[in-house]
Image (tube, rainbow, N blue to C red):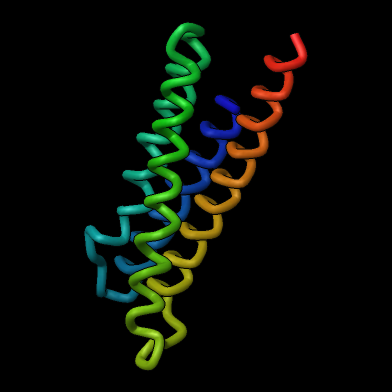
Length: 123
């Protein structure tokens, strides 16, 4: 799961950087475009530290899932709250990409946690 956290974190970093660079290109750059990158950095760091510190892995991965859940709920809530006025824009694409990336991480993590619990129960 730690490697998945690093990959999803990297993808979030790319989403944020691409969004910001696109904003620079059209003259409407905003630091809020880097929000996915901030989530990505934290997620990747949690994955890396989890790989290095075996004893902390379980706790760090639970924190990573909580962060990813927030990374899904926040942009999804924002888009749903403005559903009537939502326009197809780079910001909406970035928010959707962030939400989907985080949702995939949450689903994969929950599956991993369930499998780990089953394995422990069998031993």
